[in-house]
Length: 443
Image 1 (tube, rainbow, N blue to C red):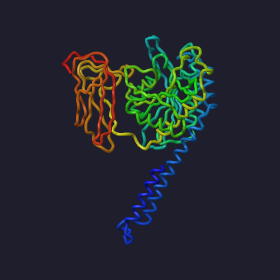
Image 2: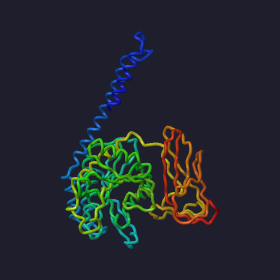
Image 3: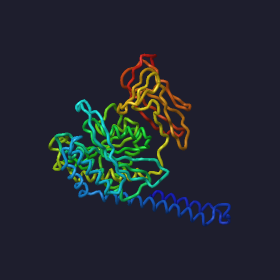
Image 4: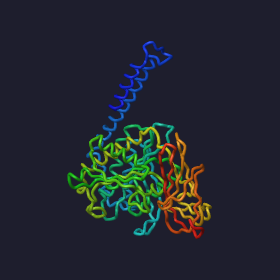
């Protein structure tokens, strides 16, 4: 802000020196126009300061008392094993708390078969609360989520009572304000059995065409043993969410949270929490985790006694400030590229799409397929789109529509990545995993 002021003063000084005294209003600009420019600059500075002050106020309202209230209640329902009465009561509690905040609340029901360690069908529900954005022309959505279920032997205070308490606390505080873009607060069940609730939720968002700009996940943000641990945190993010991760780091510095971050890029065949469901459906994600591994996870000892409320408050403030900043960004970043064909959760035979299957974001391709990349750009033309197989460049297309005919002797699961470049050098990418059964030509 000081830099902007200095630049403004310098520019005004130059104008005053270089503009001839005899210059008319039509030759340069009128005195009123000059005053208007100054007024607009001051107005911008005031708005920036106002928003900065509001983030500080939001973060201050996140306190130990609020978080302890939510976490204590969630632990009382534990163990919250998916499908049990404890999990049902926890979901009911979360729903009612969201209702008190005057948010738009709904149950998102799902039915899903468990993972290899939980070989049976589960029926349960996620809870979604929505704070609508004030900008009616914006379709941008930001999602903050955690899972409220636990393993059957644990009260789940840190895993993931801490994340769920954070979702409730942030929703409580942010619901007192208004933001440009829509925020969804979601708590999932079925995480411990294979990301069941989140996979159905992310699939529905994908099928509905929801423009989720960034999904924020918190799974275990309350464990710290030492003073040094209080300043440790991990943030993982998809490649194109690096700008959102940078906002989080800036929030930490600007508001004296002073975290030392360990960071990592999300890209793989498997993931350990609900963020992975969004990744599978092509959404960018930003994840927050405690800096030190909690040895009490998935045991009867994951209790309130092993949650550091000071640390939980600090982590929740970081997320609240980051989310508030994101929900008021002026515009999306361009270019934006998406793999629009083949679609996720589909089977293709010789390039022909077959009826819908629930494949948890995966795609099965038998014989050849065209890979289509759809690119949105706001200001600059696209110079090229690159197509990769398992991170090896295979094809470059410079003409719209951007596509690549994939026809090779290949089997099993492989990663397809598309990278779009505009004429100014801005870059965006999308990737997906495809299960191939192709006995045709060599690539």
